[in-house]
Length: 485
Image (cartoon, rainbow, N blue to C red; front, side, top):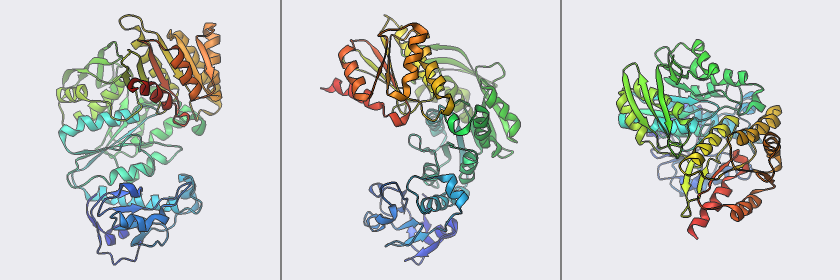
């Protein structure tokens, strides 16, 4: 973070000084975990379901923090932020935030982040949203922008009211680009994140059925995702997926210039001649108004073509040539864990770990990648180890049923459905293909691991995927741990 006195932090957050005269300087990172604090840092006192950060103020100082950003007085120098109203508290809905202190601290943190953004001259903020692919695309954007200047991006899916400002506060005087991922649990959430760090470039990837149980419909999801382009300035750029009608329609909701990306003929940055290799890694020719260039991705899955085009469009808008953007994409690597993470054991078993999260769209993309990898060269036996897709509401049974049927249509050899909540996948597969032992439902991770250990053969390829709550990465971890024994 840029160096700030406590007096400046108090003014930026609307807070008051406690046990401090305001001359103290915060020059280190802002952290909400005392274990991550460094000398000169600022500790964010967040309440949780089990512990309250306010109780760790003295420990934070011992770790080198200069002060604490808090909602109530603590045993340390601090900036005490004002309380928030009940409506704001409900919109945040933090687990364990019984008195609204967490919502108040987050509001103060957002104001501090906005102050830093407004202070940094020459900083361009890029925001990315969509029902799926946000994290992978954010990682790609960060990698294609780094050759153009110092770039800050969040680790993993750090994309909510805490992760968003925390990432912004990583920026300093040398930072040229902030690549931020914006998530939403309801209307107004993306708009609020945009107020924290106003983007000049906004990317909308897709509108799917992730969180449809909370939003009610894809149209409601589109309305919320479109808050990003509505927040763009007149001299900004909206990068929209031409292949998704709900996204392409957002062009009418922004004053910014629109750049369409995709495989559709009307796309300004377009992919042609898309091919997948035996590991489902795409290659294509990227066509732009300023020339064409060939791209070969190290990422697995055809769905990354659209993500790569969006990243390229951002880089081109910020000064890269198409050839420079293509070269950066071709050299880009997977950054965030458990997202299309491919590992091959010594016995030739390949594990495709895409277990960080799941929705119907990302599940379909992963299954298609699995089918491509299984068809390559000598036919490999394919396994799909799948768990529940959360937050689908009334659509849940039908969505799980459809994924099971898709596994059959893609000629996946074995389907292992983990947990009772995902049972409609097993039912759908059995009805679609009149399967017998090809599809099986198991109660938990241990049962899935036991089945795979008993039946996997050298050369098999295994996809592991479910929503985060299922923690299905434990299956992938168990399979890969055997490779080191």
